[in-house]
Length: 268
Image 1: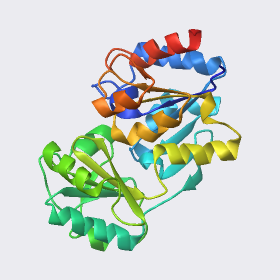
Image 2 (image 1 turned 45 degrees about the vertical axis):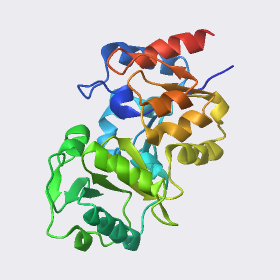
Image 3 (image 1 turned 90 degrees about the horizontal axis):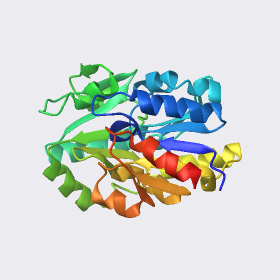
Image 4 (image 1 turned 120 degrees about the vertical axis):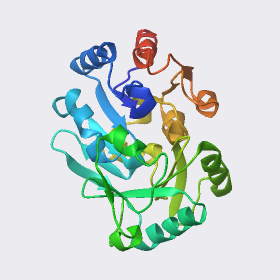
């Protein structure tokens, strides 16, 4: 089998607990790119929270892509042009905010490379700490949302997010889907958006195929890309559902699990 693409989630997959790419993983991925493989970063993160890692790996020189907001945006790393995007309407965004308010969730969205919010929570700063994007408090987030948005995130304690996720079962309404990216993050997106769906649309445009893909992930928002990939790899720190979906379970994100798996898969 000839593999041409390595698709990686970022948080708790490519990135260590220190929110960085380890030196071992970095050197290995650079070597694979020089040999002709292409890297795709696929994350729930906003685009601006992924660019520095894409630049560190020099994706622009090797034909890589950025799949951000769980697939709402697909970016060509070479020139940071938008290949396509799929967003949430203002009306649906307002309805999601109402849902989050009714469940007493903290909620946020993104505007001008800022994370906007209008309430507070114990976990309110986690997304900012992960992505490096600044927080901006507004008087009323519904008033600030005057156009489509890439996604909205509800944030709360794990048991409350798990309960809501079970209640929604992946669907907020006919236009909006939902998923969990971290145990305390409930993400709402355009129903046509997921990492797997957006990668398929990208591959259709560039003449690639999932049969050429090795994909890595750790959480529920990685599930469909792992299912579609020729080899879906769950990190050692992944939840049990993802481990059950994956073809391979590797070491955790703090022990170069990506390298461990690729060395075995590419030599097979």
